Length: 51
Image 1 (cartoon, rainbow, N blue to C red):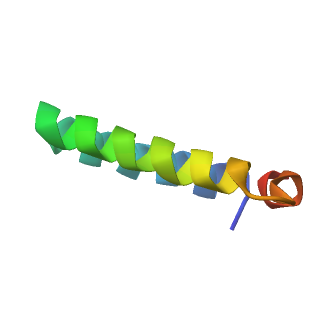
Image 2: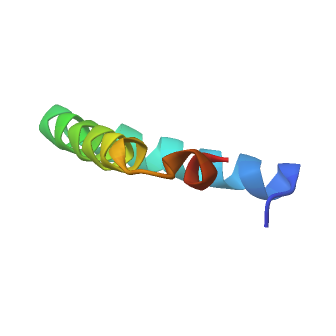
């Protein structure tokens, strides 16, 4: 769901997972997310995907 409680639970889980990651894993994860997001933005019609 997208309600506030669910969003807070999701953020809590992500925070716990990120705290357990080694610096190398954090860097690799950040790089992958950036590459995936930039790939979507570079595609035609991406504006509708990001809304």
